[in-house]
Image 1: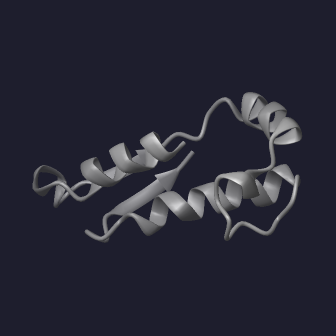
Image 2 (image 1 turned 90 degrees about the horizontal axis):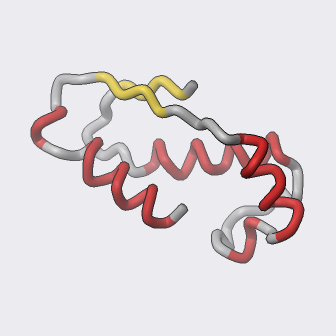
Amino acid sequence: MAESLVLFESVINSRWFLRTSIILFMNKIDLFAAKLSKVPLEKFFTDYTGGPDISKAAKYILWRFTQTNRARLHIYPQ
C-alpha cells in the first residue's frame, strides 16, 4: 500500500498532468476485506481508528490517496 501511495503521489503531482483529471480505481475490495480481517490497518497506518470496518477502512485509504494531491487535480474515485 505504501508503494502505491508513493507512486500515485509522483504521478498526480507530475508537471505532465497539471491540466488533467484522474480516475482512481479502488478495485479488489474483496481481497482488501480479507486482508483487513487478518491484519489490522492500524499496524500500517497508526492514525487510522476505524477498526475492522471495511467501509471505514476504504474511506480512510481513499483519504490517504487524496491527501497526496498537492496539485489539486480532480480525482474521481471508482
